Length: 534
Ligand code: MSP
Image (cartoon, rainbow, N blue to C red; front, side):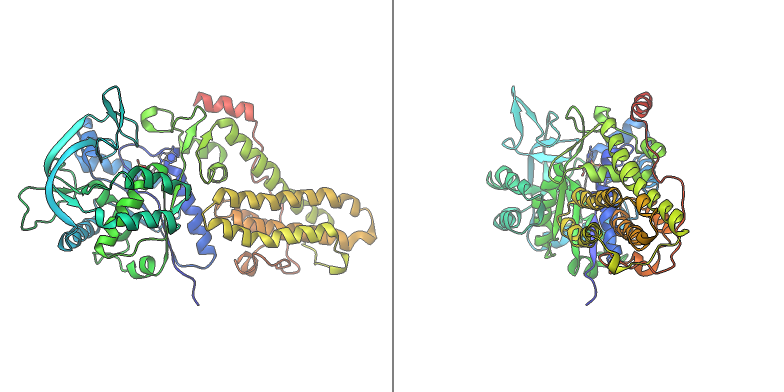
């Protein structure tokens, strides 16, 4: 049986400013998962893109005194540059101003209208412009007679009243509650109760899905009852990207059946937009008769150490180009993947970041690689010794058992997906290997001729443990992993998923190379000072 296709998506980003480290997390996480699943031999589509419509973007362009698309183009280019810089292996990049996407949005709007789920009415209510979100009074946070958006916390002052189309939500309410509480779609699952209590139990209002006052958007197709120019509500427009770039409702792509209907579909987003990716997305898809996807991983934020979300408007953003330029893109990718907890936020500080890079990449992993390669060089002329079963020790058996169990552990954790925990499991094996060096003291064995078979086993076991650990680290550090493969002469089966839980895969007579340290040790105090200055 061939492997089930895997489709993974990032949120599509607002190109209203330059990307920052907060935008990187979803994208790097998806990149890890896309690379890992390709390694497993699954057909993969990894999609990202930009969300280009809505009043906010048009207003920003106007303020800058430039044409809207021209304004957006510059930032879209910067997102693409960052993804190339961060080694993001995306397969498709959707812009919601692309023709095929516009075609799909108009198509799905028509399907929902023709099935009776979209009807014409009058919209009156409050609207949070930065979030492009409608809210009922009950949903807004009220303080001192003022209303605040529950998503972004800003004051909501706009009242809107206009002819509008609505998407019926009540036919889906019971199924949405069931989906949230029982299907395992929303991860972490403890976020589901909150949604049910805040949005379903309070009554699910029909959703306003068109605007006449917003001009920068996809035109709503003309129906018999249309009497004004409408544009499609940005969230209906934006969510639809996930199927437009597979070819649903357009002829540009032909992957909808393979990568939606018959695939494992995983959306990854930050936690503040899970409402759209659960409740609203469900009504759109089910109303149109489209299968609902398998999983949404709604992760926490990278926050500053004082608990604030890092964002452009708060002026506390980190520039990924500066961090990558100084410490290497792999180190930056690894640190964020490792330190973001599965179900909460990641407080960021330069000190923690630098300590993580030093502890894991420089000391634990980098050191293991260079010590092992140089001992093979020194004691065996650079050739990885063959394994001799009769000379195996209790320590060697323990290391082997831990290393071969890693594949199942990582697979289990990535199913959630708990990437940070998976990387932590990889480092358990790396630590075990470092401890093995202390336990076996190869420099002592080397002094005794009769201990040569034992010494050979130690070094082969270390090379095998490094091979296995690196296979699971590779999707996080895609630039460094091939260097390690090169150091240990690894090719073919040794790099396959199939042999990632099989010891003694490295062929006899394999030669190693010694090289400069993979991750130089950082002087934390000096680097903190440097980062404060930049
Ligand atoms: N355009 C919408 C998404 C539409 S998806 C159909 C949007 N765009 S955004 O540019 O504002 O944010 C995109 C993503 O970046 C969100 O998932 C958000 O959670 C994430 N992040 C922005 N800052 C972040 C951090 N500081 N930390 C982690 N992720 C955060 O919302």
